[in-house]
Amino acid sequence: MVIVLLLAGLTAGCSGLKLNPRNLDTKAVPIPKQFEAPISYDDFTYDAELNRVIIPGGETGEVALIDPKTMHTRLLSGFSHQTDSAVPVIGTSSVAIARGYLFGLDQYTNSIKTVDLRTGNVVASTALQNAPDYIRYVSATGELWVTEKGLGQIEVFSVSNDNPPVLKSSDNISIPNGPEALIIDDARGLAFTNRPKQGLTDVIQVMTHSVIAHWGNGCSEARGMAIDGADGYLFVACREGKIVAMDINNDGYQVANQNYGSKLDFVAYNPHLHHVYLPSAASGIVAIFQLQVSVATPLTAGTNSPGAGSSASPSLTSEASPAPTVNTSLELLGTADTAPGSKCVTTDNDNNIWVCDPSGGRVFAIQDTLPDQSVSP
Image 1 (cartoon, rainbow, N blue to C red):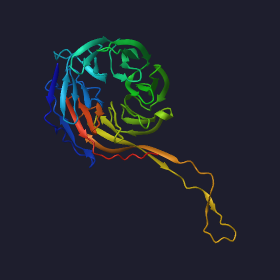
Image 2: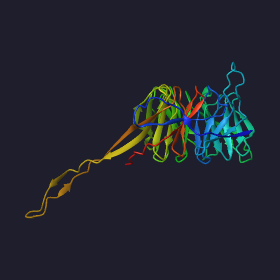
Image 3: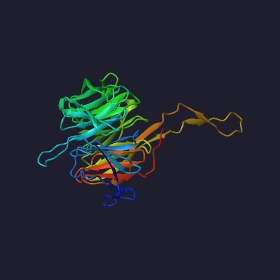
Image 4: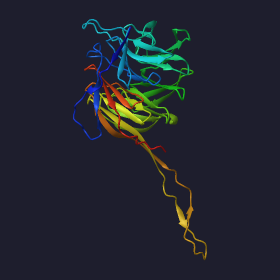
């Protein structure tokens, strides 16, 4: 059943202390009654083709699709939901959208529910080998990948061209002591996931399902990731309170890191503004960072050598030119107040930052009005 609700507009969400003039305004999105606190919010995403923010509703058994322009919300039902406060039930935690269907994890039944976006009906349910965490669609292979930490693997599903599509478990990718988080780099045909206790990020070739590299990420406990696909940077959130930027095109070389807050989990990247969004669940503040790259070209060495008897001005004779120095840093541009426990984050094409408030059952929307201050080499 599909429920379409008109959001009455944005209402004031947080009136916390403004830490600096660059503190952005935070507003709480009015949410349906079904979304009563607390809610085990987890993997917020955004689908550019639909232009919808995708919010799995945990115990509610609903997935909310929010139009960032109108703030209309459409609810998709059919996932497990909690009916007895004494019996915890977490239904949907992560979803992927492809081919006109929503594929949502149901943690209570250990399954993938297939929802027809035209009708809003659940049209299929596919069993998983273990409790799921993340689901992602891999466009290059037409597959769904599901992380299953209990088995230390990513379970791979082929997606048929039938209507509705048939999902078939076709492979398992071993990620010992993981996998935590999952990012697909469509441009390079790669996928990234973390081994949180080992300080490693695994690099997977999507066509072969092979783990081709292990990159040190500098985290004591690596959590979520975001990608700048155009310039080739991977951002890793460390739970202990650090964000690390890694160069995908240079074997994961750590080009910059910055300490911030604690109890970090998710991170998001805005490709239009080149901003990185990092919520701290401990402080209830989301930080807006930017990876800034500058090139310093040293002065060329030389000697003054005017021609004999010449009245011309002295000229500079070049010797070997020193290599330019590239300086990369993560700069804090501003902040926005959320709430203690707020951890999940995504962004959309309208430069909104979307942050969850699990304890309050709220969803925050923050308009990013800070300028793009990136400098490309």
